Image (cartoon, rainbow, N blue to C red; front, side, top):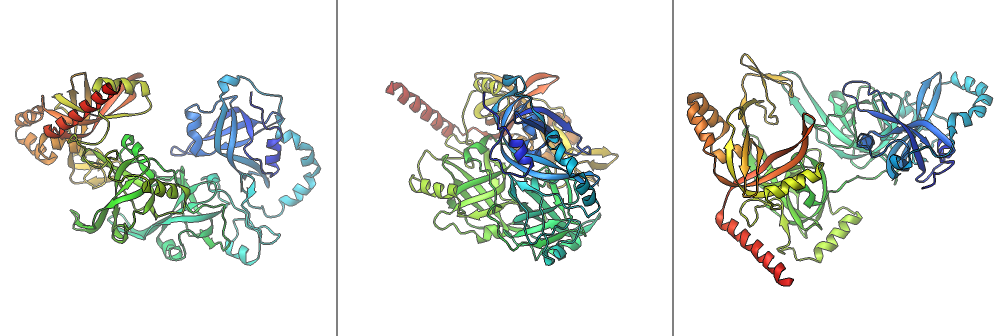
Length: 619
């Protein structure tokens, strides 16, 4: 059995740095979230074999380790990263709390099955010293309360200015001018239940000022993304605070920030890995930090290999590192609303030998230079689908770095210099392939279904040539929100259409298509869901035209839909196991569909036959 790090908890609670302590989990308690939209928090009881502590919190980004049973009672774990903070318990006293930021499971609890050693509560081990110092504590309680100190892995984040400490409730600027000490809280430790904190963070990204004006309100805002050693958080600045802070905020600079509001993150607009987000108020303070800190990174990435994007959901946000194989010319377009915009597609490849198109917009598109195949690191690119393939699109919140000075970028450039960029081995997720349909893996429905049932948690994406057996005409069309960025079904209230997602009433709606159809190849059949664009493509009419046909002649409408029966197509299908009435059920959706180009399809079949013949010959 792996030995525990005896004495580690005592050292950590006293402020010493302990590198990757190994402890045992004795209890996991779910705490109240503080509201219906609040994130769950988990409190751990941990032991090092000698001492146990219940003042240990799991960072919210690790909640899945509890819900997915990655960590359990009696598990032996290595704490790879942690932050220390203090919580006010009333009466002028504060409890030291460890916030666990990283865990590696060494032995599962169902293997250990018992408590190791005979540990005693940490509070009891320090009880005598607390009693001896009770008079000093009483005197100290009359003085203004000090801020909650914080450290990352035992390294203090406190800025030492002089020997005095100022509470975060006081003015930051006055504190700096007076030469006082400012103690900071890690971003990972922020929650809506705290109000006395100061963070020291780097601005990793900053948006332009956005101005809105509608029937409900008007105003302006900008967003910035903040990062420190423990994590990242999005901060939104509104109205008068825009005038106050926009010009002073510079990307990659360090700032002290206090008195901001913390709330649950709106994941529709916020892709950062933090359950909370920040907004400035009239009392908020931002002070530039003139001392650089190597401990706070310029940017954090979680790069995804390009080949993995094929099996990822549309609209997922990803970080990508790729080298520019080619770039298209700048294109100027006009939207339906008459607004002009500029775009440019660049084509990225990485060591997985897979190519994908990334669309840049506005100034990024106009200013991009593709000389000498630059390496691109992009944070928070959005996955899209087009013509049966996958694409990437830069968003307003995306951060683009050209030739970043990071080891992965240097390695990628060396790899690219060593390969034939025009090799047939290179596949594209964003272009049609030789089969005349789409990029991806080919499979029979029966084989893919078997793989999907075994994988369960992972979707199975594949391409097949199949025939439509039948299409259900009932409920094939629904009334959707008319706004450009919303396809939510509306509620019809006597001609007034309510969208709960947008929280708005409309006088009209847009028709959207959603079809259930049975499709089959020679091996098997499956019921699949086809979405709006693909249904329009198969039927050959727009949703608006189909709605008009349904209203004028329902028989002709049904005939048009059922005419799809016995028609062959190339389908890109996505299968994933789900639950229905507590029973496992395979859910299949159509990611893309195209007519069969038999010349290209036959070329694909001949290629597969030659590959099989080569394998047979080699044996």
